[in-house]
Length: 96
Image (tube, rainbow, N blue to C red):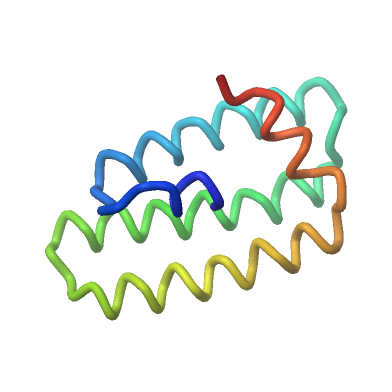
């Protein structure tokens, strides 16, 4: 989620790239046993939320609606991070 805040203007393409990154990274972490099935499923909810945001961006939905969706997703990400404190670091080690 933090990587999306570094962009001045979000586009569907930027968000879709993040969705692909999360999909691949979460799969790798799950397959290697570095994260539990529960952590994988919970984090997958963030991936799904980002897919929704990419779709909203493609449909030219208002910035207010997109901002609201992002805030809800950020809250969800914070809860996941609280439940799985090492999740962010594990994900970010794949980012290059």
